[in-house]
Image 1 (cartoon, one colour):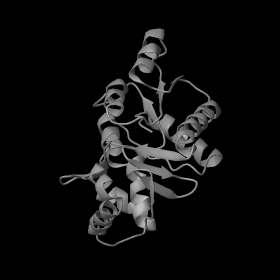
Image 2 (cartoon, one colour):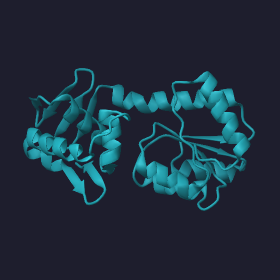
Image 3 (cartoon, helix red, strand yellow):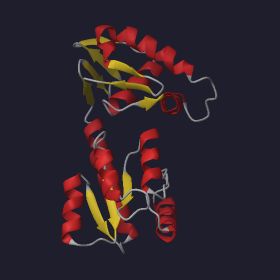
Length: 218
């Protein structure tokens, strides 16, 4: 959630924690802080105010859509038709005008997350010559099944969630090993090396982004 009004922030946090405790919500109070968090983490959905300090929600929306298709719901007092149409033109998935019902907002969040996850849960994730069949937990490369150890499969799945998006070593470490893992993040490099070898020629789709981390490309 990127929202500079403390009353709105606390109201949403309190309501969601009571009605949807399964959601783990991160918070930013400015557009620039929101962009930093979005670049460093992977989110299922973004709640975005429009009138923000440092960078407007509209400007932030433009930057988000350059790299990802994560669902975005605008929350704003700008209720004019031109503003709403502009928000949809920029690629938002829904536009909620303040003041709004917290129950309705949660319903919209649930719907957007279900819709977004449905594309992944349809079983197959594809990027170039690599396929992951999620229900069967199998990987196919150039049409042939490849057996991967759990950590390499986890890394590959994370990368394929957002082709072209750079994931930091810390992010991969947290998601594949868990937040309570305290080992050296270079363990990620070792597993990526093994993953590339297992994928054969398709391993070249996994690119190292200098000083940043890794990404997968078509």
